[in-house]
Amino acid sequence: MRKSIVLFLTLALADTAAAARDPHSYAEPDRFLVRHVALDLAADFAAHRLEGAAELTVERIDSEATELHLDTRDLEIRSVQMIQASGQARILPFTLDAPDPVLGSRLTIGFTSCCAVSDALRLRIEYRTSAEATALQWLEPAQTSGPHPYMYSQGQAIHARSWIPIQDSPAVRLTYTARIRTPPELTAVMSAARVEDADLAPGEYRFEMHQPIPAYLIAIAVGDLKFRSLGERVGVWTEPSRLAAAANEFADLPRMLEAGERMVGPYRWDRYDLLIMPHSFAFGGMENPRLSFISPSVVAGDRSLVAVIVHELAHSWSGNLVTSATWNDFWLNEGFTTYLERRLFETLYGERRARMEDAIGYEFLVQAIEDAKAAGLPQDSSLLLNLAGRDPDEGTSDVAYEKGRWFLGYLEARFGRPAFDAFLREYFDSHAFQSMDTAGFRSYLLTQLVRPGAPAIPVAEIDEWLYGTGMPATTPPIPGGVFDAVDRAAAEWRAGRLAVGDLPVHDWVPQEWMRFLEGQPADLSDARLVELRSHFRLGADGNAEIARSWLALVVRTAFEPAYADLERYLLSTGRHKLVVGLYRDLARTEAGLELGRKIYARARPGYHATIRAAVERLLGPDAIRTS
Ligand code: BES
Ligand code: ZN
Image (cartoon, rainbow, N blue to C red; front, side, top):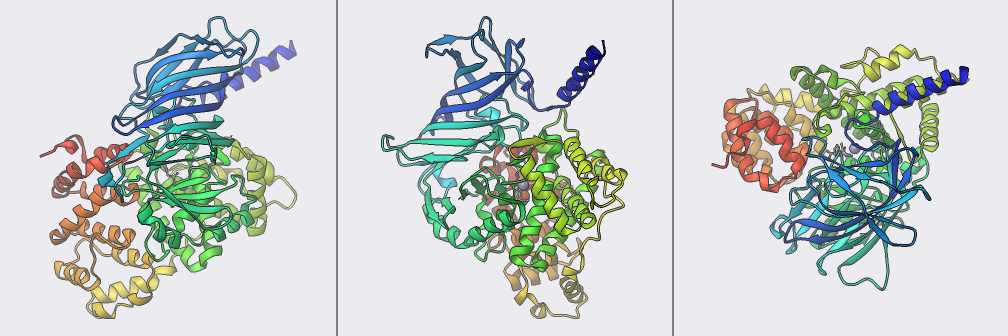
């Protein structure tokens, strides 16, 4: 009797956990788990498709389960076969549901009389991707920096399903191998180890990923790619014309990796390489394991924007080693990573530069909290999100990054730095290659807090950080002063007490330039704008972040003489952080909206699907007007 009550309770709890699991996946990891996928794909640059097969190794978790549900989006499924121990294949029935606009199509594979002998199943799915696959971008030679085409994938958040039929939930980890065929003049790279094999034909590549990762971290790029080593474990891949500049920009990579290991423990992925992408790449960086994908806008020429590299490297622990279990727990990836990024940045480049990054990040955070409130979604400023029914790319913001960073800053202050560092190291060690959700982190933290010597932290304070909106009362003092000198000089110049030529710009780092430009008011006179523009040659080129801050000022002040630069800039980069904010600012006025739509009509073909979606949300239903 007692036993059955316990069992009932356990089942009820398990049920709640399952229900809360992942609102963005059809996978049912408590029934079947996909443990491994072997990809065999050919890249068809004419048709913009990947075509071939995925062989899934599936473990049956629930012995009663007879249907496997996988995530797909826009895939054309040719056949599903079960590969028997004898090697023989048997056709299996499958159904592909009508697509849900956010989740895609559920693929259901039925096992009528299988699995009596073994619970490890091998399923071969023959398929091809759509030319519209949301993960994939196919670039014409004109969109690259050489005479060849290029393609790449972007899995995060829920795009892996548009190129692989898979359990596309960050709570499910799997290993993978791949055989990729490309036109012989192109090179394929993946977030995996390359298998060198004399038998490979030209244009044939093999990869193996031995560490289990979530599907969103399976990544591929194909193009005219060359490699330069930067140290024993590190190097850079990119198109030949970018190689020298990239190698110079990221010469600190070995030091970064060592700093990471010193702080949070051994690097578990063997190699850490960078792939410098074409300009349309949608992100500053994407932490694909062993091979971060990096925007060329980070190659500033003076190593001033390497915080992005430190950030993506830090994901080797927070995100890739310990992974947020659902996109609602996104802050566990990005907040931890932003915290580690700032700590490592401080070690590598000094306290002052790190506090500048903090101050800039905090401004973005305040804006994100205001935007969430203005949109009638104040709960989006909570660390734990509720993105059920929404596209996770839409609901995530700087809150996860910067509020998450300050939550850990708050814990650091309570623990003391050495004790908190020990806490972090143990957290990564004890949860390596696992997924974590907000409740799981909370209970881990609470168990650590009852250990002798731990600080006394009221649970209510922790819960306010995790579940409350806006910034908690216990927010540590945010370092402000780093930009005081810049702010003073700006005010003096505006008041006419300092000539433009006397602004102390000679020792400004780009972050100070950004502060100077972002701090200018919307009613700055045209005469002042002309002065800035000509004296400092502000435009669409040079440091991409300074250019963004200048162009944001151009939009804010409706400074028409610089609209051509704005257009050129929006046509030349596709990075989320650089373009989406500019369109958002444009959309604040009627005339701006008009201009934004006009520019977007031309820029759209160069943007990745996720950027198109973000911009179209801002510009409204007329966004795609092509007149
Ligand atoms: N993992 C993110 C990029 C991402 C987030 C892709 C959400 C898809 C959905 C990456 O680590 C990141 O945060 N990139 C930032 C740079 C970073 C320095 C803040 C970016 O792209 O701007
Ligand atoms: Zn990140």
